Amino acid sequence: MKVDEFRALKPADLAKQLDEARQELLNLRFRLSTKQLVNHREYPMVKKKIARLMTIIREKELGIR
Image 1 (tube, rainbow, N blue to C red):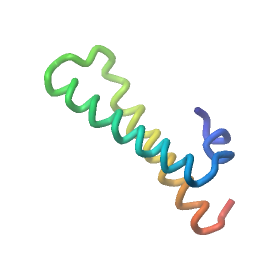
Image 2: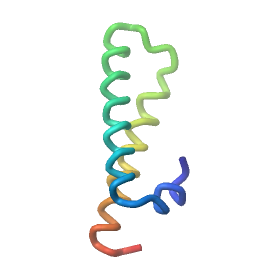
Image 3: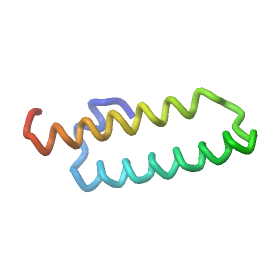
């Protein structure tokens, strides 16, 4: 999803997306440690997605956008 699509979501949906991304990061961590991860670019991409979601959630809390 793009940033504009994330910003259009409600706070409950953003929290759900954040939980899913964190679960995905956990799974990637396990696959990375057991040498089963094929695409190593997935790990930083998921971390970046989590950072975006947390930023958007904080913006909504503060009423910035």
